[in-house]
Length: 167
Image 1 (spheres, helix red, strand yellow):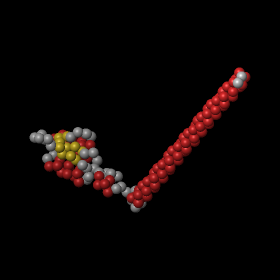
Image 2 (tube, rainbow, N blue to C red):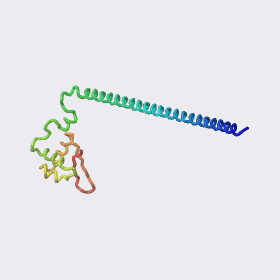
Image 3 (cartoon, rainbow, N blue to C red):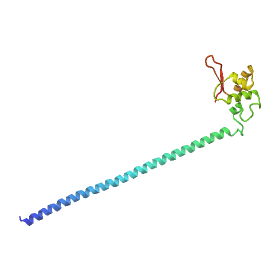
Image 4 (cartoon, rainbow, N blue to C red):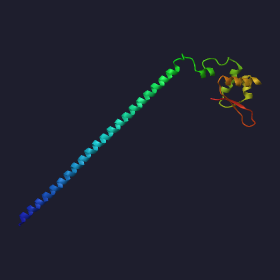
C-alpha cells in the first residue's frame, strides 16, 4: 500500500468517525429538544390543572358562600316576618324602645350612678348619688334586676359589698 491509499483510508475512517460523532451529537440534541418540549408541555399541563383546580375551588367556595348567604336571609326573614317593627322580648325586658325610668326619679339616678362607672361602687356612694335611703336602696337594686339589668354584688373579705353594672 502506498502512501496515498493510506491517507485516503485514514481520511475515510476520520470522516466516518466524525459522521458517527455528528450523528451521536445530533441524536443527543434531538433527545434534549424532545425532553425540553416534553418538559414545557408537562409544565403547561400542570399550570392548567392547577388553574382549573383553583377555579373549581373558587367556584365551590363562591357557591357555598351564596348558599350560606341565601340560608341566612331566609332565616332572618322567618325570624322577623311577623314582628312588624316591634322590639324583641329581651329589648322589652330591658326597656329599650320605651322610657324605662321617669325623668328625675331616684331609680334613674341609681342606674346612672352604676352606668357611669366601669368599677364597683359601694352602697354608701350609690345611696348618696341616688338619694335612696335604707331598704329603698335594696329595693331599687331588686327592681333594676327585675327589669333585666345585670347587677353584680362583689364581696371581698370583711369589706363592704360593692355593686357594678355587668356588661
